[in-house]
Amino acid sequence: MFIDSAKIFIRSGSGGNGIIHWRREKFIPKGGPDGGNGGKGGDVFTKANKQLTTLLDFKYKRRYIAKDGNRGEGSNKEGRSAEDLIIQVPCGTIIRNIETEDILADLTIDGDEFLIAKGGRGGKGNSEFATPSNRAPRIATNGESGIELNLELELKLLADAGLVGLSNVGKSTLISTISAARPKIGNYLFTTLVPNLGMVYYKENASFVVADIPGLIEGAHSGKGLGIQFLKHIERTKILVYLLDGTSNDILKDFKILQQELFSFNKKLPNKKSIVAITKLDILSEKEIKNINKIKFPGKLPIHYISSITKNGIPKFISQIWKTLQSANDE
Image (tube, rainbow, N blue to C red; front, side, top):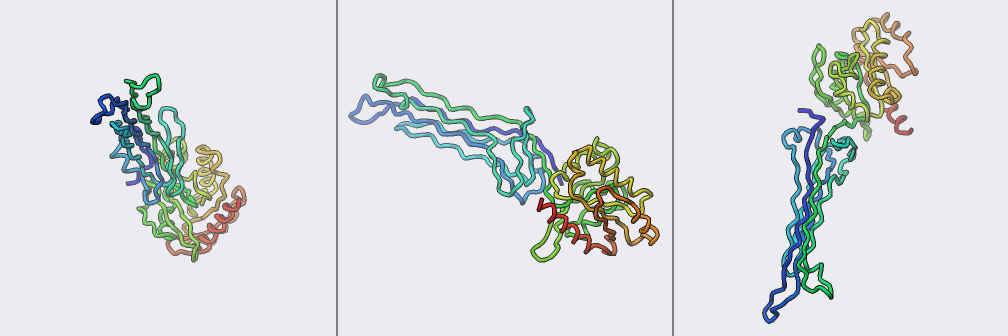
């Protein structure tokens, strides 16, 4: 199951208390103070892990609490510090403080770590307070309390190219053709209910990741259909691939709907480098193709005719995606 948002509670460990203790040894009836300091509480870290692809685990476990440091001991022994708590999250996870709405971390690279909450320092034992004028202090301090936070985790998929299109335009069929991904495919609206990632091999030592985003409808940015739930997943893509149904009555209108939805969600999205792909080439007549060729798409975008069924046009299409990605990387 694909889950791209979750809310959790975390608490770092409290520091152990310092203690009041006196040195007690044979032939030394009045030994001095030797109360040790408390150990440090455990820190809470988040760490990006490329092996994870969903936030599903956080639906079942919502509380993450680091251990407290141990109290001090006699003979000036410091209490044991607690181990740090490391919370593993998928690459592409944003961590936000629910109360302040501040973004604390945006983990995109495998192995990235971020300190979310520092553990409390240990308290001081009475040996720390001994002075020439006060050789028998009866003072010790408690350890600092841990930090409590309510966090929101939001996963935005990391992909090189994002497939954008209206519902039932053939995005899932295309990604299953050009990659090893096997999304659910059907001839009805909203077949794709979750984003899918596919690795496309262009040539030796050259590959890229494509994201199949659930189909958009007019008003998606305001929550219609699957709406805003999945639009966020194309914010990180380097380029966009507009998939347009070649059998549509108004292809240009379909394109403008997609651009408007992207713009309404994030004004920067339509400015990404883009490609237009006209699908269902296998059932288009020469006359229909000539009519499509007369369409003037904004920005003079590269246009490719493809068929996921016959694979006609697919090699050139993949090559164009690769070239556009290289161009985007050079900027």
